[in-house]
Image (cartoon, rainbow, N blue to C red; front, side, top):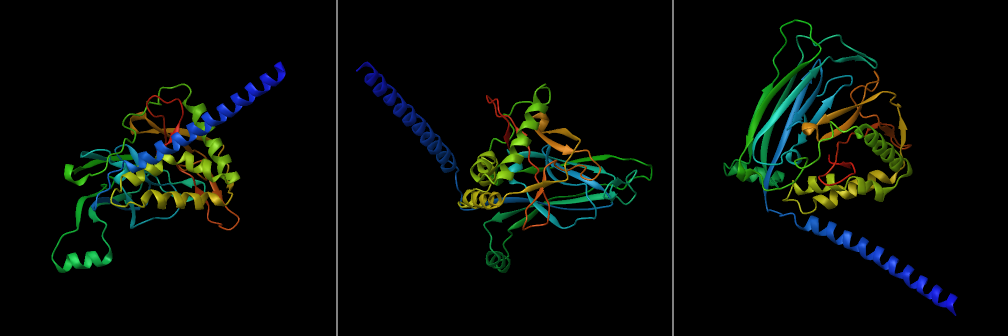
Length: 323
């Protein structure tokens, strides 16, 4: 009789624990969904874009001390654009930093120094969104402006003296009326630069990320990118389907298991966002400047460099992908 009572009590506890766990999971889901619902969608807003090109150099372009674009490979790239909204956390002065390094001459060798012809040119513009081609044509017909140049800047040519690094700084201003989104970004993140455990924690995160894609674990992959997806969607508040579209793209990406190539034997920490954001970059000659995680699938031969930036939210003891 006593044994039966014990079994019944244990069964009841088990059911209670399962119920509590399920309740907690459902509560977390509701909270997460509510978080997305709290985005104040506007009918229209401003989209800030950066267009860039370069010649005879490797480079990094940063907005508010966060990497926007970089190139350490062969060849040259021009006419590329990147959306900036998710890197703009508040109105006012937005700092731009451009760092130049020698260009790559073959797969494992960089030039000894920058050349007199080395430069990076950027153009930052803002335009009303959403704007279809028809909307743009109608606006032009009515003489209405829908796009504005915010900044045009080109790094100066060197004076001919050998140098293997050059840094340039400029800025642009964003009016209060032009920013109708609110994201935390790295504002309240913890400073990681002086922590003795940062390298160990970053290495563990990269290892877990690699395993997640090797196994094609979609749900875990989405969980790792949750904050990044949320803030990208929240910074395009006129697009109610942004979060859904980004999530679908991520799910489709993780569907096929990936094989990792070009093993990086020497990677270093690089800090951004005033020391609140960290990433790993290779120092090996072949993959210098890029993520130590480079993969491809059986169907797609083009390698993919998995670059992401980690932070530790205020009050948390775990690293998360921010961008």
